[in-house]
Length: 257
Figure 1: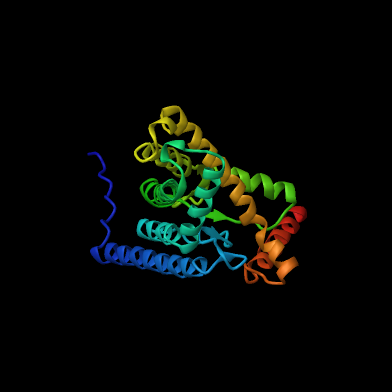
Figure 2 (figure 1 turned 45 degrees about the horizontal axis):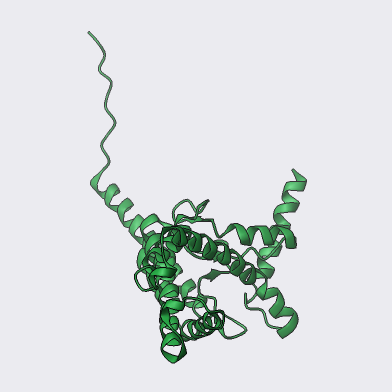
């Protein structure tokens, strides 16, 4: 007679409930940690003026929820400095005879200002809010803060096209940023004069904005160094020193192996 092996016991309902409760508590702790870190990020301003809400000085920052991403993007999009920069951009375009379909004088200037703000609002909400929430990507710039100037420069430029995934926390193609820039460019065809719109221009402008984002990351990367030397203030509140110490310890451990 064939021997019948005993089947493993089914998990007790109590054990399954405890495991589910532990996962729920871990999720709550992660959301709370992310919320606290976002509060810190919302106070960050370059030279006390330019918002740097989308920059994290923590390499181990907790991933944000979909709602937190959209909320942080909206906070950046409606900041008074964002409105003010739209008027500067409009003035630049009027001086250079750009977007002639808007006309000239006060009317043309305010039309350009409105278009510039919509460009910024759409790009921020789509590229830093909605798409990251949908694709489970972290829209923030994670400042390196240590290493050679060349390494940090290449890292900052690369973040225009790579980002961290929410779950893996590993680098992956930044579809949210590139896609958001292209989508917002496509939407701009609705309010720009027909002579200044089109499919080719949409993709061209999307790629240009992506490249400009890399340049902006350069500023985010090196601003704390400039601030400490010129203003004698540390925007990272000691996180840079901590990161350097951890990097040095890691190198010593590798050398000792």
